[in-house]
Image (cartoon, rainbow, N blue to C red; front, side):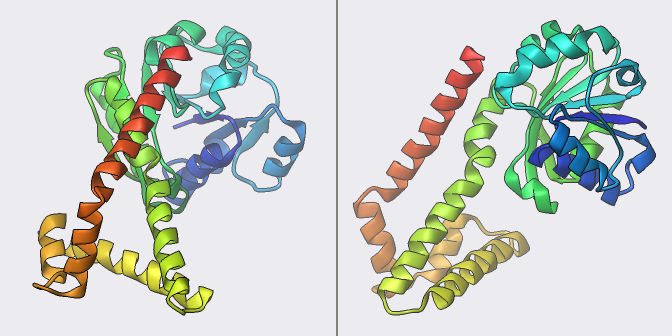
Length: 268
């Protein structure tokens, strides 16, 4: 299988390294198109495939084309690569907010998969939600899912609008976790712990909670009940948070992310 990744930024490189590490593709069959001369030279030193600076006939050789560029660059990109794209090639886009229809019209292929990965894909524990145009065959979808699973876990959704929802949940989600970790760290330092101690307390607590959740078949609410005791410290904290409607405010933030995702998608 030959893969062309267009864009040698963080996510493009994440995909390239994940595919190579899991032996889904060998370096000889990995192509990367990077328009920045400086970045292209750096990529050549990493031995992760053949690096190109300009579109050419090699594009037609790819079984899968991955679009990993910034959304604002698509008009120029589509104009440059369209003459070299075959309508039967499968295109996987990880560009935020760019609809399948826009991609299909822009480069002349009907086989488009649109995906929303997240930052932990860089270390192989990412969460990717994806969908596709009807022209993508079942076999092609299985191939794409295997590729996405190389970066963590992947979930297929029937409706493209759910990609915007995934952007608000798993796409932006790591920032929510870091936000709460930071607040826990700040609280710990205010209580007298050193910064290093506060960071360890926060990190290990989050890690332990996630591993507990994954190991046993309990809901989050059930776990809260297991940590809490009547009249105890945890109950005091949860009651205070509920009293201040912290949970409702958090959900408001998540839905604000959804609204913004829809705006970006509609304006792209």
